Length: 184
Image 1 (cartoon, rainbow, N blue to C red):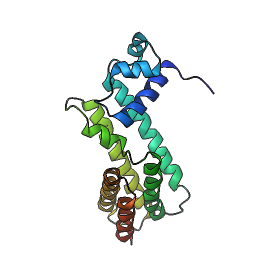
Image 2 (cartoon, rainbow, N blue to C red; image 1 turned 30 degrees about the vertical axis):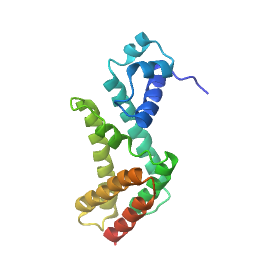
Image 3 (cartoon, rainbow, N blue to C red; image 1 turned 120 degrees about the vertical axis):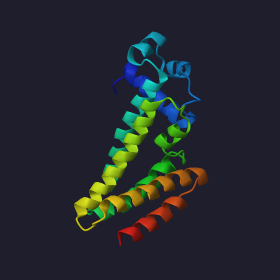
């Protein structure tokens, strides 16, 4: 296995810390120590904790959307893929012991002047929104794909946060049932 470079170690370490501890609870010195890098090396790649968080969210977006697409790829219809996304949520949230959404978590923990981080959270949620709408449009039978896609996005986001709060799958199961009703 290839050894990670300094930049990759910083991003990987910070990703774990930001996701599990929170953005405000994670300091630069902890990232440097846990990643096993020198402070000067860290500053060669990132000027601030905010820049590290942006790199974390960009990598997380790619990983999360990739896993979602892989998970639903076994479905043959847009409807199947959209409904299958709730099964993906169940698997993912159980894997992370209901820690929840990295973007929801970081936004709630964010000082108000960190617009670059906020922009990444907005990008992710808008990309998920676009993914849902695109599937519904591709199916061709959903005349109100944009409105319906927005309603399904709200079901997904609500299911994620409520599952995190409840530490249980029932919000996802309920949201999936509601999604099936919307798509029928």
